[in-house]
Length: 250
Image (cartoon, rainbow, N blue to C red; front, side, top):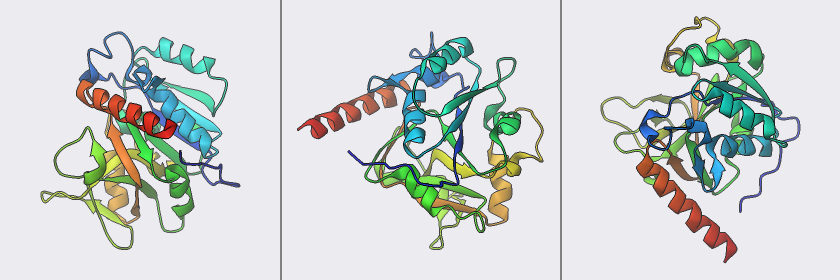
């Protein structure tokens, strides 16, 4: 098991957990619950995320809610460890990844934050989030993306998302594809979202601006990434975690 130690005087003490999605592709697992509450390895996806954030010293987690929002809020109130939970309410309208962040800006503050997709899981060979914090340089970076190598992923096929230069900067993969998938976790400066309205849009619009300024960087995930996006991937992730537990107990 990888030992994770909270980073003293960490510049990243707040996170946003993107938990408002319908989880349509995960049906029938999401017929009666939200995606964030689907269990993998005996633990809800939202708890996997919040527990990882706690390990690196994150104190506040803004969680957006929409589908089965009451159930999710009830569960979050029962947590007795980890970050303080602050709800960003999207009950009336699901705002997608970009609009959800804009709506949450008053709750996030001005300092850099983690943004975590709820369906991103990994088995780390080292302290992944801690590595991102240590790599973060606000003087040169506006966003730092966690990138998973195509050779060590589960739940995604096809071309990658970004190309990674030797200096750590990233660019869109383009038609040729790449060896790197965006793994659903980034460090983000909230002010990047301030020019946008509270409306439905993808965070790709924000990324495009950062990429044009050449202020988007990548951090390679040392481990195995699992995108729990459909029942087949969910079943495979369960099998991976069972095998991991057996190895740790042997």
